[in-house]
Image (cartoon, rainbow, N blue to C red; front, top):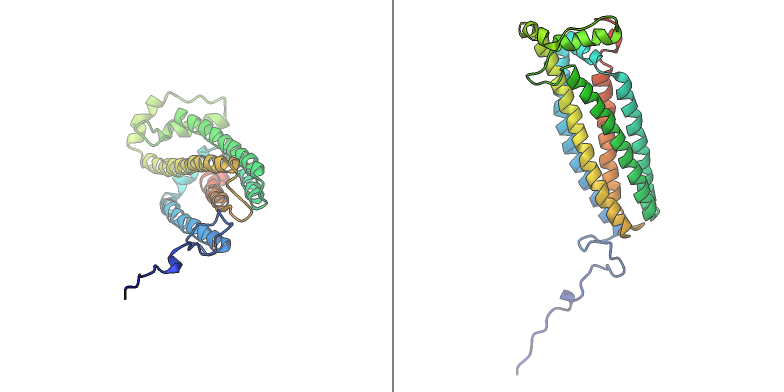
Length: 263
């Protein structure tokens, strides 16, 4: 007597109860699990970023204690007013990003797009101020390249404080810097300064790119009140970028504040 084997019924139509939930990935049981997994992944990524920037902050701390006097003088060359303006700009960008996430929680795609666009505008303003700073830094020869001239930068700072004093051409200071150990110490400060601020700016540019992608999907109506993990993830990332600057500003710009006016 011949009998025909039947395939197990469980292999057909197995969707873990996902009927009516197109925004729920097949490997998650429910939206809460999907949301928690997305957040956990983002926090794990941010922990690697903390280690990345932590190495730079650690190096800065070591050299700051090793070359305390010169690091204070170098910090005094930076413009704390422009750094403060950028701090305010990034704080506003954190607010607009929080409003974008709130819009996602409420299922308002237009709100996501509008508030993320505002966040990008604030970010571009920040980078504009930073570019202005870097242009000035290049003019006073503090880029940590072969063109670096510590003595000239110090003289230009004196000129800024006392306009009646005229600094000489930078070429006249190069020979003096060759035998000046403070020049190498000042160069280390600006190497760390440009490393940290340029990497911070790079992270902002990456954030812009991700936000544009998120805005595109918001325009397509991809996010719902039960699924907005990408919006929340870029929000966490942006707040982290802002937090890094909150640490950079006092470390780099306010270190030599008590030396204001001393030369």
